[in-house]
Image (tube, rainbow, N blue to C red; front, side, top):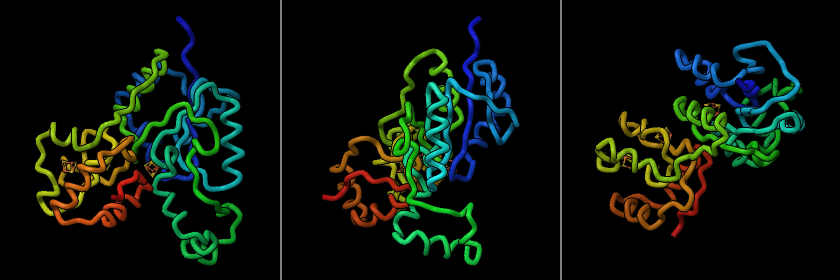
Length: 250
Ligand code: SF4
Ligand code: SF4
Ligand code: SF4
């Protein structure tokens, strides 16, 4: 039997919620450990290794020192995968970039402690803006089932497929009542599917935490907005949370 791929997990600026998804795989963790040899995973183990077959990177890059650390990991990894929206696009950490003056943002958040060296800050970047990412697994947090499927496919040498259709497709298949009909704005028409439309299925509007579909259907989106008396500006405001930025203007 050939040796199992050496896998490592690393975190940058994030809430570590995506790592927790993996650490909390419960009975499925055995399936994962049968496939791969986890050689580094700070949240669950103390081991270290000099090189990796696959490095999974969580979090966005928000300091100069992060860039150097990420480049070093890249140099020691055969495959590098950005997982979770913080890593894939910058995610929720992108909100900081909207304010321009990052020192002001830091003072607002940390007050008198803002000059401490570990609170150094820079414009938020995705992993792919600093090094080559071979694959991006979207979501805030990542979906455990999707993560496991992707690891299996990578181990088999396949190129994993990430859904490129909107959340509305999954929502309709579940025969949910559309939240627009209940007076709520929802980003489902432009949001990337793959989560099983978990939010609208539980009465919560989609915030597009998996980013936008490539080439969103602008015309259909405008028709929905018009039908329910919402403006394009309103939906652009909603997209701000996860820095989703497809071209939706008329
Ligand atoms: S993508 Fe979401 S859950 Fe994952 S680390 Fe970032 S903020 Fe946390
Ligand atoms: S609730 Fe949201 S995701 Fe579901 S059909 Fe309506 S717009 Fe689409
Ligand atoms: S429904 Fe939307 S916000 Fe909820 S998990 Fe899916 S993509 Fe993310």
